[in-house]
Image (cartoon, rainbow, N blue to C red):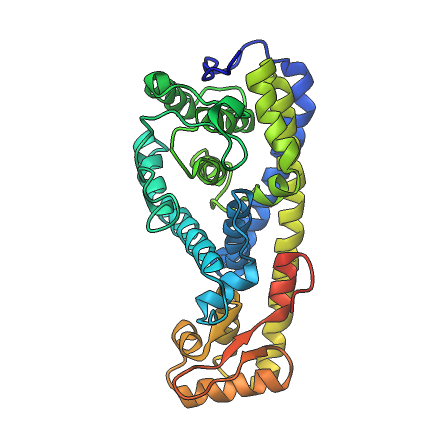
Length: 373
């Protein structure tokens, strides 16, 4: 018997064992609150957590099959991509779109709700001029799609999302649930919202990335976070099979309970990882601030440090612009002192019109969670 398109469950799921969920809910909410406390203590989270945001874009895209690394994305930003393959450059473009979508969403959520139209506008940015751009960017699908290994026919699909004939009504029910203010717990609500979105699979491409983007955006919209800077892709990428199996258990066994428990555990684990990285970055920033000042004896020491935190791999021209240093001579002397003291590293020496490219290795290593430079 061939598989049929899945008919989605009504929202919210019935017969959840709330008593069993209480410990998971308590731990997850406490973890998010601790992380947001750290976020609120940062004077400029945009500067300090910029590399973590970029890494989220890398990891969320990697779940969908891209291969570009954080280092390659940052090198591309700095103009160092002469030897990259066309496939990697295509990956980098997709990752750049993800960053743009997240940035736009944060600005827009100050005066808009997380509606279906809002999500379509995110999708249009995500799919602009990349693979899949022919798959109706910014529009919900009017064709049947399916999930399986590349090239798998629908008969052998792992999962067949709902028919386009019933998609709109279930999307509207999903939107109603996402806007509910009276549901028992926002993190359980988020677990349901994320899973149902992936089950509906409303776009022809890019569903996984949009679904993961929704996680920080929902937490921000619900005021669980002061900034939409909570990223779950690192955990989901590490536990990819369990992630997919959890979603499949909803559609095959109506196992919302197991999925919600898994999702809340993911929130706890990722909160701890985010806290560890953010604290490491904050400690590094404070240490380097003193060191940059004592090394350069310059009034521009802190703006120079901020430039490297915004762009851990940066060329001379961008460094001058981002740091706001008024002239090239001052900037060059500052970079020379920082290179000589081994605070920064030259990745490519400039020649002719090609600018020198520098990196801040300590920051990259913390963000990646391993030594890459």
